[in-house]
Image (cartoon, rainbow, N blue to C red; front, top):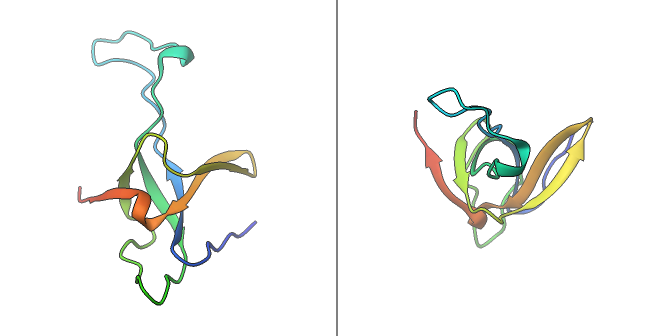
Length: 91
């Protein structure tokens, strides 16, 4: 299935939550935090007032409660407005 976000929306694949601490302790599901980073999979065309700054394959940081979680082909993704993205990460 192909998804093309509309206007200033962005489709993001969240980075998986850490499974273990650096010291090797396994983190249970109930203690895992929602990921705050992800990879941009698709972007909309923007609006007449705001052009799209992020592009596909950018690694971005977003707020804890940003976006709407959707499931496509068994994979959990987030769709959010570009303004919900806090930063683009350069690695």
